[in-house]
Length: 243
Length: 96
Image 1 (cartoon, one colour):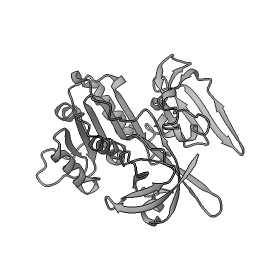
Image 2 (tube, rainbow over the protein chains, first blue to last red):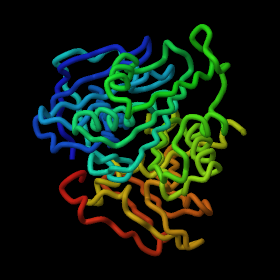
Image 3 (cartoon, rainbow over the protein chains, first blue to last red):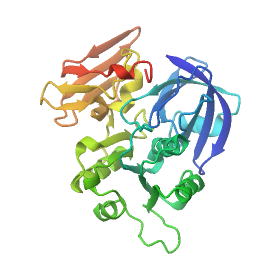
Image 4 (cartoon, helix red, strand yellow):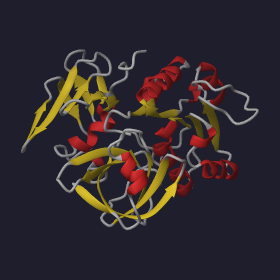
Protein backbone atom coordinates (compact mmCIF):
# COMPACT_ATOMS: atom_id res chain seq x y z
CA UNK A 1 0.00 0.00 0.00
CA UNK A 2 1.45 3.32 -1.08
CA UNK A 3 0.94 6.49 0.92
CA UNK A 4 1.65 10.05 -0.16
CA UNK A 5 4.05 12.23 1.84
CA UNK A 6 4.47 15.97 1.34
CA UNK A 7 7.94 17.43 1.68
CA UNK A 8 7.82 20.05 4.45
CA UNK A 9 11.53 20.67 5.07
CA UNK A 10 14.97 19.96 3.60
CA UNK A 11 18.26 20.06 5.43
CA UNK A 12 21.76 19.26 4.16
CA UNK A 13 23.68 17.01 6.55
CA UNK A 14 26.88 16.90 4.47
CA UNK A 15 27.87 17.91 0.93
CA UNK A 16 26.31 14.67 -0.35
CA UNK A 17 23.52 13.87 2.12
CA UNK A 18 20.20 15.55 2.69
CA UNK A 19 17.44 15.07 5.24
CA UNK A 20 13.94 15.21 3.79
CA UNK A 21 11.09 15.80 6.23
CA UNK A 22 7.77 14.46 5.04
CA UNK A 23 4.32 14.92 6.45
CA UNK A 24 2.23 11.81 5.86
CA UNK A 25 -1.45 12.34 6.56
CA UNK A 26 -2.31 8.65 7.09
CA UNK A 27 0.97 7.68 8.80
CA UNK A 28 0.21 4.88 11.31
CA UNK A 29 3.28 5.62 13.46
CA UNK A 30 6.58 3.77 13.40
CA UNK A 31 9.21 2.19 15.61
CA UNK A 32 12.87 3.31 15.64
CA UNK A 33 14.87 1.25 13.16
CA UNK A 34 12.16 0.79 10.55
CA UNK A 35 12.45 1.91 6.93
CA UNK A 36 10.23 2.97 4.07
CA UNK A 37 10.29 2.26 0.37
CA UNK A 38 10.17 5.38 -1.81
CA UNK A 39 8.75 5.09 -5.33
CA UNK A 40 9.52 7.61 -8.06
CA UNK A 41 7.55 7.42 -11.29
CA UNK A 42 8.63 9.14 -14.51
CA UNK A 43 6.11 10.72 -16.91
CA UNK A 44 6.50 7.71 -19.22
CA UNK A 45 5.42 5.35 -16.43
CA UNK A 46 8.88 3.99 -15.58
CA UNK A 47 9.21 3.67 -11.84
CA UNK A 48 12.03 2.97 -9.41
CA UNK A 49 11.75 1.89 -5.76
CA UNK A 50 14.45 2.34 -3.13
CA UNK A 51 14.50 1.74 0.63
CA UNK A 52 15.49 4.45 3.10
CA UNK A 53 15.74 4.17 6.85
CA UNK A 54 13.64 6.50 8.95
CA UNK A 55 15.85 8.95 10.88
CA UNK A 56 13.19 10.48 13.10
CA UNK A 57 11.85 9.13 16.38
CA UNK A 58 8.20 8.13 16.49
CA UNK A 59 6.24 11.38 16.90
CA UNK A 60 2.61 12.45 17.07
CA UNK A 61 2.97 14.94 14.19
CA UNK A 62 3.00 12.21 11.52
CA UNK A 63 6.34 13.44 10.32
CA UNK A 64 8.91 11.14 8.80
CA UNK A 65 12.50 12.20 8.23
CA UNK A 66 14.72 10.38 5.76
CA UNK A 67 18.42 11.11 5.38
CA UNK A 68 19.53 10.18 1.88
CA UNK A 69 23.14 9.85 0.75
CA UNK A 70 23.72 10.70 -2.89
CA UNK A 71 25.26 7.83 -4.85
CA UNK A 72 27.41 8.88 -7.86
CA UNK A 73 25.52 6.75 -10.38
CA UNK A 74 22.28 6.48 -8.46
CA UNK A 75 18.93 6.47 -10.17
CA UNK A 76 16.91 7.83 -7.26
CA UNK A 77 19.27 9.42 -4.73
CA UNK A 78 20.44 12.31 -6.98
CA UNK A 79 16.82 13.33 -7.42
CA UNK A 80 16.08 13.09 -3.69
CA UNK A 81 19.20 15.02 -2.66
CA UNK A 82 19.23 17.69 -5.38
CA UNK A 83 15.87 18.09 -7.09
CA UNK A 84 13.16 17.55 -4.51
CA UNK A 85 11.60 20.80 -3.23
CA UNK A 86 9.37 21.72 -0.29
CA UNK A 87 5.77 21.06 -1.31
CA UNK A 88 6.63 18.09 -3.56
CA UNK A 89 4.87 14.80 -2.95
CA UNK A 90 6.57 11.43 -2.71
CA UNK A 91 5.07 7.95 -2.70
CA UNK A 92 5.98 5.86 0.34
CA UNK A 93 5.41 2.26 1.40
CA UNK A 94 5.79 1.46 5.09
CA UNK A 95 6.79 1.64 7.83
CA UNK A 96 8.55 -1.67 7.14
CA UNK A 97 10.28 -4.12 9.48
CA UNK A 98 9.68 -5.42 12.98
CA UNK A 99 13.04 -7.04 13.67
CA UNK A 100 15.70 -4.33 13.28
CA UNK A 101 13.91 -2.10 15.80
CA UNK A 102 14.47 -0.67 19.26
CA UNK A 103 11.48 -0.11 21.54
CA UNK A 104 11.52 2.09 24.66
CA UNK A 105 10.47 -0.93 26.79
CA UNK A 106 13.95 -2.40 26.21
CA UNK A 107 15.98 -1.71 29.36
CA UNK A 108 19.14 -3.68 28.53
CA UNK A 109 22.42 -2.04 27.43
CA UNK A 110 22.41 -1.19 23.74
CA UNK A 111 25.40 -1.31 21.43
CA UNK A 112 25.00 0.55 18.15
CA UNK A 113 27.54 0.17 15.36
CA UNK A 114 27.15 2.30 12.26
CA UNK A 115 29.08 2.26 9.00
CA UNK A 116 28.61 5.56 7.12
CA UNK A 117 24.96 6.30 6.39
CA UNK A 118 24.10 3.15 8.35
CA UNK A 119 23.86 5.64 11.20
CA UNK A 120 20.37 6.69 10.10
CA UNK A 121 18.19 3.97 11.70
CA UNK A 122 20.46 3.99 14.77
CA UNK A 123 19.92 7.75 15.09
CA UNK A 124 16.17 7.06 15.17
CA UNK A 125 16.86 4.74 18.13
CA UNK A 126 18.95 7.40 19.93
CA UNK A 127 16.27 10.02 19.29
CA UNK A 128 13.54 7.63 20.36
CA UNK A 129 15.42 6.91 23.58
CA UNK A 130 15.62 10.64 24.39
CA UNK A 131 12.01 11.36 23.45
CA UNK A 132 10.68 8.43 25.50
CA UNK A 133 12.79 9.36 28.54
CA UNK A 134 14.34 5.90 28.49
CA UNK A 135 17.22 5.23 30.87
CA UNK A 136 18.67 2.42 28.75
CA UNK A 137 22.44 2.76 28.42
CA UNK A 138 23.51 3.31 24.82
CA UNK A 139 26.90 3.16 23.19
CA UNK A 140 27.47 4.16 19.58
CA UNK A 141 30.50 3.21 17.52
CA UNK A 142 30.31 5.27 14.33
CA UNK A 143 32.69 4.35 11.55
CA UNK A 144 32.84 7.12 8.98
CA UNK A 145 35.12 8.10 6.12
CA UNK A 146 36.18 11.54 7.35
CA UNK A 147 34.99 14.29 9.73
CA UNK A 148 33.11 16.09 6.93
CA UNK A 149 31.00 12.98 6.31
CA UNK A 150 29.57 12.80 9.86
CA UNK A 151 25.77 13.08 10.08
CA UNK A 152 23.97 14.85 12.97
CA UNK A 153 27.25 15.74 14.71
CA UNK A 154 25.95 18.58 16.89
CA UNK A 155 22.81 16.75 17.89
CA UNK A 156 24.77 13.62 18.81
CA UNK A 157 27.17 15.71 20.88
CA UNK A 158 24.31 17.49 22.65
CA UNK A 159 22.49 14.24 23.42
CA UNK A 160 25.71 12.73 24.70
CA UNK A 161 26.56 15.81 26.84
CA UNK A 162 23.17 16.17 28.45
CA UNK A 163 22.92 12.50 29.29
CA UNK A 164 26.04 10.47 29.88
CA UNK A 165 24.07 7.34 29.08
CA UNK A 166 24.79 7.79 25.36
CA UNK A 167 28.49 7.28 24.75
CA UNK A 168 29.92 8.14 21.33
CA UNK A 169 33.00 6.79 19.62
CA UNK A 170 34.02 7.96 16.17
CA UNK A 171 36.23 5.73 14.05
CA UNK A 172 37.53 7.41 10.91
CA UNK A 173 38.53 5.30 7.94
CA UNK A 174 40.21 7.78 5.53
CA UNK A 175 40.94 11.08 7.29
CA UNK A 176 40.77 12.14 10.93
CA UNK A 177 40.52 15.46 12.76
CA UNK A 178 43.89 16.98 13.73
CA UNK A 179 45.69 15.17 16.56
CA UNK A 180 43.21 12.31 16.55
CA UNK A 181 44.67 9.41 18.56
CA UNK A 182 43.72 6.62 16.15
CA UNK A 183 45.07 6.65 12.58
CA UNK A 184 42.48 6.21 9.81
CA UNK A 185 41.56 2.54 9.71
CA UNK A 186 38.69 0.11 9.69
CA UNK A 187 37.15 -1.02 12.94
CA UNK A 188 39.06 -3.84 14.62
CA UNK A 189 39.04 -6.11 17.65
CA UNK A 190 40.90 -3.60 19.85
CA UNK A 191 38.41 -0.86 19.10
CA UNK A 192 35.47 -3.16 19.82
CA UNK A 193 37.11 -4.28 23.08
CA UNK A 194 37.83 -0.70 24.20
CA UNK A 195 34.62 1.04 23.26
CA UNK A 196 31.73 -1.44 23.21
CA UNK A 197 29.87 -3.13 26.06
CA UNK A 198 31.53 -6.20 27.55
CA UNK A 199 29.75 -9.29 26.23
CA UNK A 200 29.01 -10.44 29.78
CA UNK A 201 26.46 -7.61 30.11
CA UNK A 202 24.52 -9.19 27.21
CA UNK A 203 23.91 -5.99 25.27
CA UNK A 204 21.58 -6.03 22.31
CA UNK A 205 23.71 -4.99 19.33
CA UNK A 206 22.40 -3.21 16.24
CA UNK A 207 24.74 -3.03 13.26
CA UNK A 208 23.88 -1.12 10.09
CA UNK A 209 26.02 -0.29 7.08
CA UNK A 210 27.20 -1.65 3.76
CA UNK A 211 27.23 -5.46 3.63
CA UNK A 212 31.03 -5.78 3.95
CA UNK A 213 31.01 -3.49 7.01
CA UNK A 214 28.15 -5.37 8.66
CA UNK A 215 29.83 -8.74 8.15
CA UNK A 216 33.05 -7.42 9.66
CA UNK A 217 31.39 -5.71 12.64
CA UNK A 218 29.12 -8.67 13.42
CA UNK A 219 32.13 -11.00 13.17
CA UNK A 220 34.09 -8.84 15.63
CA UNK A 221 31.17 -8.77 18.07
CA UNK A 222 30.88 -12.56 17.98
CA UNK A 223 34.66 -12.95 18.36
CA UNK A 224 34.51 -10.77 21.46
CA UNK A 225 31.98 -13.11 23.04
CA UNK A 226 28.60 -11.69 22.04
CA UNK A 227 25.92 -14.23 21.19
CA UNK A 228 24.76 -14.14 17.55
CA UNK A 229 21.21 -14.12 18.95
CA UNK A 230 21.81 -10.66 20.40
CA UNK A 231 23.10 -9.10 17.20
CA UNK A 232 20.64 -7.52 14.77
CA UNK A 233 21.90 -6.42 11.42
CA UNK A 234 20.73 -4.37 8.48
CA UNK A 235 22.73 -4.25 5.27
CA UNK A 236 22.57 -1.86 2.39
CA UNK A 237 24.47 -1.54 -0.85
CA UNK A 238 24.72 0.91 -3.72
CA UNK A 239 23.94 -1.84 -6.21
CA UNK A 240 20.89 -3.12 -4.42
CA UNK A 241 17.56 -1.63 -3.53
CA UNK A 242 18.48 -0.75 0.04
CA UNK A 243 20.61 2.33 0.57
CA UNK B 1 37.79 -10.17 -0.64
CA UNK B 2 36.64 -9.86 -4.23
CA UNK B 3 34.32 -7.10 -5.37
CA UNK B 4 31.49 -9.60 -5.62
CA UNK B 5 31.98 -11.25 -2.24
CA UNK B 6 29.28 -9.13 -0.62
CA UNK B 7 26.75 -8.71 -3.38
CA UNK B 8 23.81 -9.55 -1.12
CA UNK B 9 21.62 -7.56 1.20
CA UNK B 10 19.37 -9.02 3.88
CA UNK B 11 15.74 -9.81 4.53
CA UNK B 12 15.02 -6.24 5.61
CA UNK B 13 15.54 -5.13 2.01
CA UNK B 14 12.92 -7.56 0.64
CA UNK B 15 10.25 -6.77 3.21
CA UNK B 16 8.63 -3.98 1.18
CA UNK B 17 8.08 -6.19 -1.85
CA UNK B 18 6.90 -9.07 0.32
CA UNK B 19 4.36 -6.77 2.00
CA UNK B 20 2.39 -7.05 -1.26
CA UNK B 21 1.73 -10.67 -0.25
CA UNK B 22 2.11 -10.85 3.54
CA UNK B 23 -0.04 -8.71 5.83
CA UNK B 24 2.28 -9.48 8.75
CA UNK B 25 5.88 -8.32 8.97
CA UNK B 26 8.20 -10.94 7.49
CA UNK B 27 11.49 -9.61 8.92
CA UNK B 28 10.67 -10.76 12.46
CA UNK B 29 9.26 -14.07 11.21
CA UNK B 30 11.26 -17.20 11.91
CA UNK B 31 11.75 -19.67 9.11
CA UNK B 32 13.43 -23.05 8.86
CA UNK B 33 15.76 -23.78 5.98
CA UNK B 34 14.61 -26.93 4.19
CA UNK B 35 18.22 -27.75 3.28
CA UNK B 36 20.24 -27.41 6.50
CA UNK B 37 17.49 -27.07 9.12
CA UNK B 38 18.71 -23.72 10.48
CA UNK B 39 15.97 -21.63 12.07
CA UNK B 40 16.58 -17.90 11.56
CA UNK B 41 14.68 -14.66 11.33
CA UNK B 42 13.81 -13.78 7.75
CA UNK B 43 15.69 -10.48 8.29
CA UNK B 44 18.88 -12.53 8.50
CA UNK B 45 18.48 -14.19 5.10
CA UNK B 46 20.85 -13.12 2.35
CA UNK B 47 18.91 -11.33 -0.35
CA UNK B 48 19.92 -11.05 -3.98
CA UNK B 49 17.90 -8.52 -5.90
CA UNK B 50 20.03 -7.42 -8.81
CA UNK B 51 18.41 -9.80 -11.29
CA UNK B 52 14.72 -9.86 -12.05
CA UNK B 53 12.85 -10.55 -8.83
CA UNK B 54 14.20 -11.46 -5.42
CA UNK B 55 16.12 -14.51 -4.25
CA UNK B 56 16.50 -15.19 -0.51
CA UNK B 57 19.25 -17.58 0.56
CA UNK B 58 19.92 -19.19 3.94
CA UNK B 59 22.57 -17.21 5.89
CA UNK B 60 24.02 -20.52 7.11
CA UNK B 61 24.15 -22.80 4.04
CA UNK B 62 23.42 -20.33 1.17
CA UNK B 63 20.76 -22.58 -0.35
CA UNK B 64 17.66 -20.91 -1.81
CA UNK B 65 14.86 -20.23 0.69
CA UNK B 66 12.50 -18.15 -1.40
CA UNK B 67 12.11 -16.72 -4.88
CA UNK B 68 9.73 -13.98 -5.87
CA UNK B 69 9.26 -12.51 -9.31
CA UNK B 70 6.62 -10.22 -10.75
CA UNK B 71 5.76 -10.63 -14.42
CA UNK B 72 3.09 -8.43 -15.93
CA UNK B 73 0.06 -8.92 -13.70
CA UNK B 74 1.27 -11.97 -11.79
CA UNK B 75 3.57 -12.56 -8.83
CA UNK B 76 5.29 -15.92 -8.62
CA UNK B 77 6.36 -17.05 -5.16
CA UNK B 78 8.45 -20.18 -4.59
CA UNK B 79 9.01 -21.06 -0.92
CA UNK B 80 10.01 -24.70 -1.19
CA UNK B 81 13.35 -23.87 0.43
CA UNK B 82 11.61 -23.27 3.74
CA UNK B 83 9.83 -25.96 5.72
CA UNK B 84 7.85 -23.29 7.57
CA UNK B 85 7.61 -19.59 8.32
CA UNK B 86 6.37 -18.53 11.76
CA UNK B 87 4.94 -15.01 11.82
CA UNK B 88 4.26 -12.81 14.84
CA UNK B 89 0.63 -11.82 15.05
CA UNK B 90 1.50 -9.09 17.58
CA UNK B 91 2.98 -7.18 14.64
CA UNK B 92 -0.44 -6.95 12.98
CA UNK B 93 -1.57 -3.43 12.36
CA UNK B 94 1.67 -1.95 13.60
CA UNK B 95 4.10 -2.31 10.76
CA UNK B 96 2.11 -4.05 8.07
